Image 1 (spheres, rainbow, N blue to C red):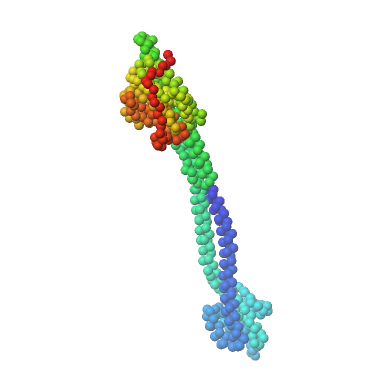
Image 2: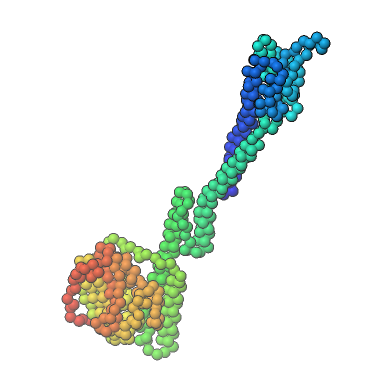
Length: 469
């Protein structure tokens, strides 16, 4: 495209330069000829007053000598013929004659200025009436150099201007071509990079309007591709992580099978299944791009109902392991803008971490605080705690916890951020870890960050939640 534009501009500019330069050069040549012959006519006319007074040779020679052409020997005067007794009729000539006799006679006959060719140039023959009524002819020689004086220089100037115009137009066309071609090349390169799997390829949104629109569309498409791939990886990781909940139950049940080959095989199979699930989670999360939290359905769910349901499940395991469970704040409906499956997955992740990373018999509690703008879910335990809370909240960071994929807290964080809230880790009143899940009810940061008072319900007396067998 770039060279095509240069060629087109070169052809058009060359045609324009030729169309104007050639006629202008011819006009300059004609103007130079007119200037030379106009000067010759003025010089010939300057002899007219002298001829009207006298035809004496000496007077005429002095009149010729004081003119510019006469001083150079380029002027002559042809007087009418005179009759002499011994020589007959003879014409008189003053100065150096270059015109032929026929040209002089033709000038007298037609009675107006006449131009004729002569060796080395041209001659201007100007008829002048004498006092006697006869016609004299004044001859002025115009050399070839005078006719073409300045024409060559003018033509060179025209050629230089035309060449400069062509070069300038080619340069401008090349710059315009670069301005058009470079965005197209960048777009093609980015498309090739994206096709080869480099998902970070983007195109600068500049250049002509059409290419800028194409760059904007390409970047939007690339973002959508990255988002879709990220969602697919996250979905695979989340679904795999949800398998850990029934695996935890299987592991705990397998631990109570006692001794024997069948029991050992069952425990080995459960451990192998847990390892495979961990591998799936880590593989799905490797080199995945960062994604924005997905928005939840507008309908949301009743947090109290979901929490009661999941606590009924986990309390059965807690009873088997001798864990004391406290539950508070779920005695009435609490609507939150989170889908029921997402909240259930977040709760399973939090409670599953307690069973996996704290010793048997470690108590834990779950409190729900319903405020005007936010709902706070507190999950606390009496375990050893988390040494580095910030690292634990990083996406996919398992820290030093054995058997951890780092995905559990990430699931909880994404659920909280989907409402405009967040997740914080700290030390609980039980001595272990406290996970504070902040769920905003109106899509913004609320509670203590905005100076709003969060209403805390009075915690009921400790009670052990009965669970399903």
